[in-house]
Amino acid sequence: MKIIGINGSPRGERSATLQLIAAVLEGAKEKGAEVDVVNLIDLDIRFRNACSACFQEGRCAEEDDFPKLYAKIKAADGLVLGSPVHIDQITGQMKLFIDRMADGIQCQAFTGKYGCSVSTSGDHAEQAVVGYLNHFLQMLGATPVGGVGVATGKDPDALARAKEDAHELGKTLAEAIRTRRQYPEVEAFHRRFQEKFKAVITGAKPEWPGDYERWVDQTWVW
Ligand SMILES: Cc1cc2nc3c(=O)[nH]c(=O)nc-3n(C[C@H](O)[C@H](O)[C@H](O)COP(=O)(O)O)c2cc1C
Image: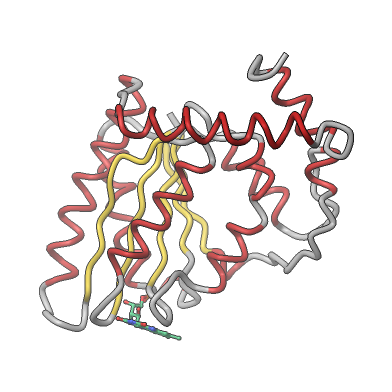
């Protein structure tokens, strides 16, 4: 079982958010997972120009670090997303990574995988970020199992307590992967989302043959 953490903080190794991600991964490791972590700030991930080569051919036209990272996370069973709050939302680094994964949403590329999200803030919006990151996981077809958000500026002990919660979250994530745990509300979301994209993909078959083939391969359209 492989679980990968993705840290969207530009502070990289000095990041408080990375401490939460590390705690999740430590909990998962105790339950038998093989873990790895990536600081997005260390990678060359560029803006794209909405060329839609990925929709047409199933591959990215940009030769930066994204294609390799995407292959790495697609080979994993679980994903831990983490971002600090920057101006009430995820960081630019995390948003850039997410926008590069639009094809992953259309292809529901993370169906059957699990994930969770963490966030730190000075004093607000950390829960909104956790909610957004988990929503993104659902959009990819994955199943989020929970999240931890903490405002570090309010209380000097808050981060230490949140790390304990994150450690438990890691165990939950690994157990969910091992037992293929079902979450009825997430299943319902996936059914609704799949209906929506089935119509999109079928309608765009001539323009997006790569994505259409993926749906046929999965027997989601025939
Ligand atoms: C550019 C920038 C914007 C920020 N915006 C917010 C904000 O809107 N709300 C908040 O509570 N904290 C905000 N913060 C504080 C960070 O969210 C907080 O320090 C966080 O724990 C940093 O995590 P990191 O060490 O993982 O980067 C901001 C920090 C920076 C650098």
